[in-house]
Amino acid sequence: MGDPAVVKIFDTTLRDGEQSPGATLTAAEKLQIAQQLARLHVDIIEAGFPAASPGDLAAVKAIARSVRGVSIAALARAHKSDIDAAWEAIRDAESPVIHVFLATSDIHLQHKLGISREGARERVRTMVSYARSLCPTVEFSAEDATRSDRDFLCQIFEIAIAAGANTVNVPDTVGYTFPNEYEALFRMLRERVPGMDQVTLSAHCHDDLGMATANTLAAIKGGARQVEVTVNGLGERAGNTALEEVVMALRTRPDTFGSVDTRINTQELLATSQMVSQLTGILVQPNKAIVGMNAFAHEAGIHQDGMLKNRMTYEIMTPQSVGWNDTNLILGKHSGRHGLDARLRKLGYKLDAEQLQSAYGRFVSLADQKKLITDADLAYIVESGQETPAAV
Ligand code: KIV
Ligand code: ZN
Image (cartoon, rainbow, N blue to C red):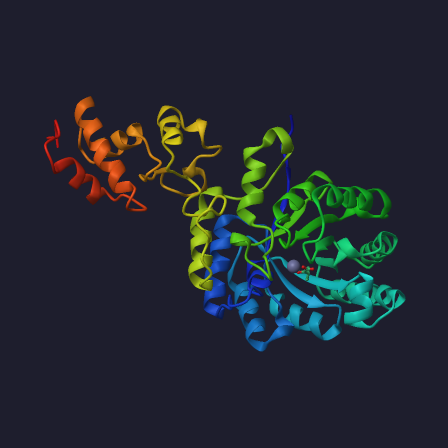
């Protein structure tokens, strides 16, 4: 078997992610995150939307000038002034990318842009070729692609490719699609659009129906070789596809995605997640896949017993592989004797069967009153009363 094909990771935490309400970052914070994204080995960092504000232009410029070993992209509407601002911001990058977008659904054309389909075709032709006259790498996105007329979408991508786009992106802007539908869309585009085999086909999903990761993985099955994602799934409304989820799905299930992988250094996932959370002030929910506080925590007695016998019983990846120190066996009212015994041994208490039974009784009645049992609680439980630990 040859080397797996690479799915490029286009990280848009600093652009689509920063559009999340309340997530605004300073230029220095954006630079700090960009440096961490480079350590994570993403392929492309979308650093911002330079036409949006002079501050964003300056932040993107600082990233383009100092972050190396990774492509730097900037977003632009299909307007000359936006494209000029994007180019001004990224021209000093090692590998700059101008990302031009235009909506293609009738809803957006009629109600938002007020232009005809012919007007849209003309804008894509002229603006993609203008961007390409400045920058060797241009991505074109058809905003709201999943609600666009399929024949029109094919025409638009054909025009974008002929005008010089190296990557074409198929956003599910409003999180509307389903995995089978999105996969079929990618297959259809590969079959019908002339020149599609010469460019990188990209997926970009939002999570309005909780489907962003599933849709992105379906796109990979349909032939996408770039995925646009954010750390912690940060982004507009319900967010974007979470980088860590797609990366670990590909790593964990080579039986399904055997011939594709990413370049991500997965051991940096947790550090990246924690930095983004701390700097944006947006907390990660405890049950978040991969990077949530409880992602590798087990409280139930049956699970703890299984984990103590063999980690593979309840963990499909190791905590260390994504940056955690270890599994966390939490003691609470659902825990059993094996879990209690294992923790007590870690604390230096080796109880015989009778002592353990008695300590367990006290533990359960305390656990009925407290959500989480601390090491100090355990020491008290063991050391108080009649029983004496065999060794401390
Ligand atoms: O969701 C979207 O359509 C976007 C585009 C600008 C790529 O973020
Ligand atoms: Zn988006």
